[in-house]
Length: 266
Image (cartoon, rainbow, N blue to C red; front, side, top):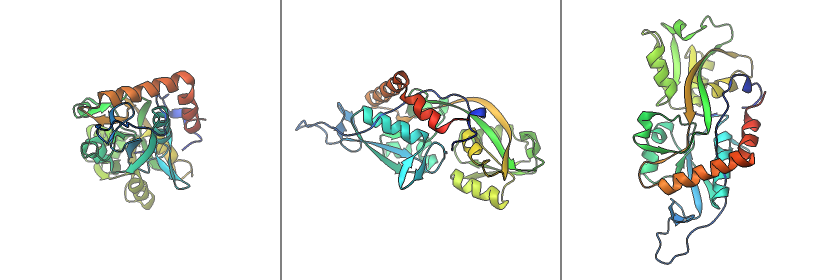
């Protein structure tokens, strides 16, 4: 989910790649009208349509009426490099990580802090990794919860369908009450209201919730996770290659590092 700025790098692992955006398509009379950018089978001609679960700062959120964030800025660059316009569809994370919204033709690419896992690779095609992440435990300032082992008989919030939920269910004490939420927004509102005692999710998102001083990080978990952009499993080989080509170009020309530093700096 998601998805902030100051105080971040101290605990963040370095990212890995991506991006570009603008306009073009095929003019062949007999071509599929959705086939643009060198014959790629796109949802809309001349546009790269991206699905994302918004908000999930610092990765995706709205600011001044526009979608922005680390994922969004990378994907804008990817679209630009492919000479395509950039369009965003706001969808639920569960529909993204399952591949349902891609299979339904809602979008060409999913960009929403999606961790690459073997289970997901069975039904999704992933780009090269573009960010290394950790899991973390957020608690109210002054809480007696110092680690995941202290969650027994406590309520911990997780985002449904995420690796954070999986990690919690596999590692928290058996008597922990795991409460699943559709997004970070509902999770954070719940801990603010005292509905849950802690949140376990991606480190950058939890760091963003510490900025007002009401919450603190109790623990971090080195889970060796990497994010990737997702596409349909079958028939997207050319699209995957095109996205990876833009990621490589961004790493080579320094644009990736510029975007990374704008969201993850001390």
